[in-house]
Amino acid sequence: MEKRIVIIFLILFYTNTINAQEKLLDILPLEDGRVTYSGVVQVNDVSRSQLYNNAKRWFIDTYTSGKDVIQLDDKESGEIIGKGYFEEVWMVTAYSGQNVNVWQTIKVQMKDGRYRYEITDFRMKYIVPASNYTRATEIDLPIEEWNKGRDKNNAKFYPKIDSHVQDMISSLEKVMKSSEGDDW
Image 1 (cartoon, rainbow, N blue to C red):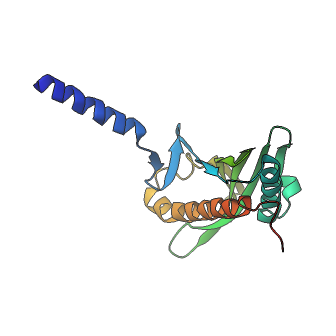
Image 2: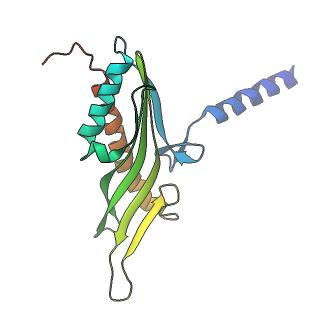
Image 3: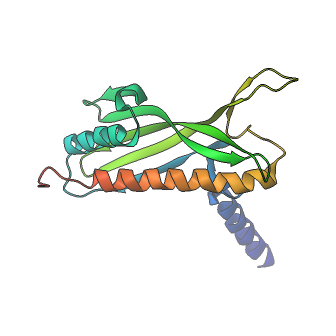
């Protein structure tokens, strides 16, 4: 009987460990070691065609130039993939900040009544200005590799990124709920 209890406990522990979502510094969600936000959202009574149009509108409204952002635009399969960035200020020290472009890839796939989004491939890009002793340096690193060893500093910066991405997801959800019958 004790063996069964131990086996059941181990199975439950192992299953919970596998299902627990990993996070970078307990802030940014990880899938297979990469920062990734994803979800499937039900939008009843909205056709795939309308979801596609809504997603296109979202890309155009979210980025300065939706045309430059969209990398794949396939109405037949109901898929749009784009690469864009947003800017956040990273406080390098208590007194100085650095503007960082946070690049990401956004994939939206549509079917009648639902869509799936995935935001991944985050890259940190910025320029360290020249000084009297060094030349200007361009930094371009995956977020998972960026600023390693500065966890305390990143723990202050990553919530800004998470908040921005959560706002993007919320705005996508709002736009995707629009149906063809919406009248202004």
